[in-house]
Length: 157
View (cartoon, rainbow, N blue to C red):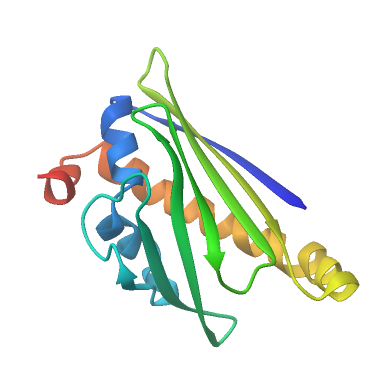
């Protein structure tokens, strides 16, 4: 299993950062480069425990679908989404939020296993790990941008 850990400091309240992170609408904005669309399940608004969303997105020139379910949820501290259907052999994404003197420390712990055994492990090391790290960093930058400005009001109000 591969693990990516990303920490993002955000000068905004932890509750705002948490809610922006569970926003389907903000995720669509942050993943617009991959033309990501919510096509089934919770397709707009804030996702909650036990809910799922199926995403359709274009990566590496190919269209992929992936369904994730929120399997743990404790606002505003953390939530976990896990893939139930999709290209990965397994995928689990824990989102943690902690208060700091400047606002919030948002930590992503993204664990994944590619299919195809040995070939999948090679693809992980050469391409996928860097690609997914960049994807998550871009997503976090959008969350930070919205949380630290008045843009969050358009998503959460």
